[in-house]
Image (cartoon, rainbow, N blue to C red; front, side, top):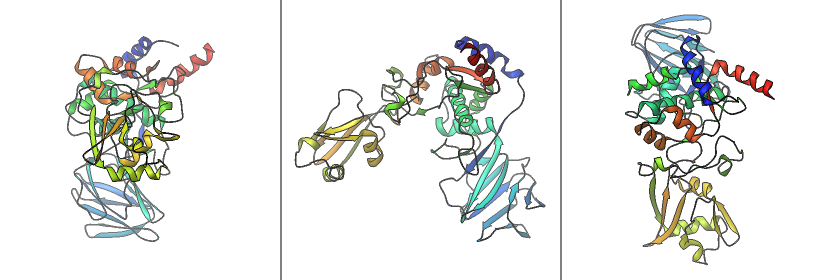
Length: 381
């Protein structure tokens, strides 16, 4: 397969490729929504079934789910409908749910409200790269190096395109189940510039398939093979030492819990806590995936989830009637280490170099030219 250099040649041609994708994103996915309020900064229109209604600028419209339909109210107008679509207004839109104040998050695009099984789904339909910029801000924060923003933009775009139609009414949701999204990027204009400079670029593996774009906050000094965390052994997610993330904010952590809580937890996992050695020490010399005592093995990722630890890489010792967890890293440890990538960018590494450090045998291509790579791969075989 052609090397990354060919991908860079394609990058030079990217501005000549026209067209943009739209994406459907479920908002407020972690809530059961029975009421939505929205306010547009400009005059806007919505479709209530087959009727089109105009709303004045800054007029608040409320849509409430009922047993059989949705009721809407805007100014002095009211109505009922089975389908509700806010046509894309000229200005930005603020939203609020279940009687709460309008949130500080600002959105763009059109909106579809779908009543289903006692709840109401809010689906934002917007340009893919507008969505990507919002995800980069939510996942990476402001005031980061531009090359890091480019890396994150490419990965967020790759993840989105590789997960279309993930939900019944939308492609993706706005929570950690998919990618965190809080609306438009507002904090750092360099994010939108990074998205523009990497327009359409996605990451493919050596078989010309979009990669599963895993990323996490900090790997604790060593990334992991994908099969160490999940079942699938992905050839582009190979663990390796990462010196760049050490000393960063999330590279080290500590958590203390009462010893009786730790003992009770181990007992639920069938560990014999009468043998005090089983609870007083756990000092793996390297990254291991199990806490083991005699014939009992508990996956460290299970302990991490159950006890809400930052990572599955930790030691345990007792001190002053407490179980002290000392760990490294934040997140699952597979794929891109965000804090390591930020540090690499600060040290002058390009986004291509960063991607190739964290992923093995991958290539950058515009998403609407992946077919070309797939075709040539078939010819080579």
